Length: 176
Length: 427
Image 1: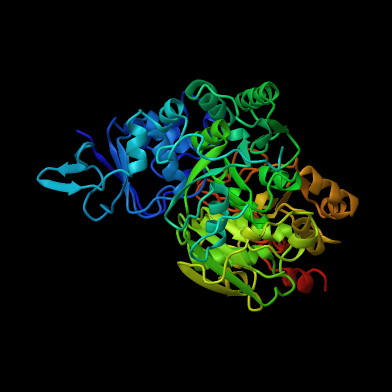
Image 2: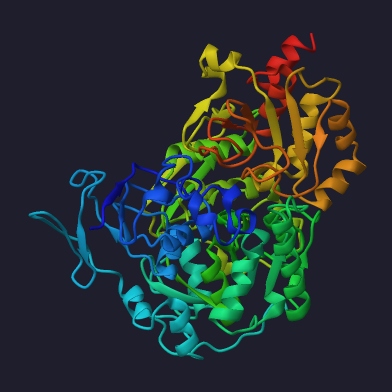
């Protein structure tokens, strides 16, 4: 059964994956083994597919490095639940298809709790306790219907939520 | 290019309205043309993989894409060298611009090259892309997937941000710099105080372009999507910018928060480990902190590696020596900055004071090369982040400050103000 890994407020992208362990430095095959290397050194070795991360406010502040959430994706983290996310990191999570829920469960769940998450309904269950997570944004649901935002764009030639391709006229461009 | 809007708009709302072709307000989704997509070496391989494997696309407008090799430059390992080799090959094959080792830090280079201009949308694969707001460009950072989508489509999607209005009043006292104002702003806003928002800075004619870059740069440390400075001063006169009327905010625009920062009263600031918003008055630091040995001083980065920063440091270091047991690393933000500093003698002053000069680029800022820290070491840095392990070992500590405070610290070997150096060493 998936377990909870609980973190505090303001977990930054250097906490999630220190810059010196970026894939182009540590290696594409092993960089994920450095996830939370400084603040939770046992994490990468012990995390199991589907495990959920609970964080405090401002999860993912700092760098734009997509390889921080990519490391969590490689470790098959099942989702991240935090009361607030930093914006670049939140976009990166959406883009990589890692479920991110804006909810404050820091007072309700404990590190090591065994839980199940029903992705279709957003119901998180711990024993007899049930927590309802907010639904994913419309933008994300539209993208995930095609598998990912990359797959969506490749198929439709536009972004989810954008009215139609080619709607905007090409303009003279100052760089040209 | 005007889009009549029914309600007064902030800078962010106006720029995104015009560039998206319809009036938008905070909370709306805007799809906008992107004028420049900037890719740094750290994510070049991911970017190429997204373009080629996931999207099977070429850059829609190669002239609107720049790759900058700055985060680990020159390469420190074979794997880094390989990544940079692939970036060069990709640029040669697709016709996108490439700024190679030694040209400098991405944000500084794009600004110098005129690849960020008033009213432009500039996306960078680096969070400090808020820097372009210094010239009223809507600059924002994104990850590799968003960056690739923008390169492939020529567009991006954005949620139109709410805006925080920051108004500067008064003038900075000698020895106090834009970095201190920026750190004070982060202290007041907090590390999540502007998450998803645009920080709109009203400074009148104050601050050079470089100083405006320092202010806009730090906005991301409050979580901001953009840090836009209302054009004024030398932005209007010195760079030949065509400044559209629609980059200015309209009276009556809606702000979620308004903050006034009084520059007259500002004293040098320092951000202590391990959060950028852990900001203190240097003069009021505890005796224990002021007496602590400092192992390394680093002057450089996209925050403070410009010519005015090097001159500020040189003014303190002139005729003095770095304290025994302390090392001073100085890395100009770009080759152009380095040339200016050579021509006016600034580099010679720094070199004679005992500085170790490095290749223009990001240096040790994110702990990859050129001066990482050992366990227990203390660094005073002009950079922008002091997170755990940021510049090396997890038990090293990074204190963020202005170039003047960093230079004074190098002379004294402990955290110091510029006047401490004058009083003690120059007496």
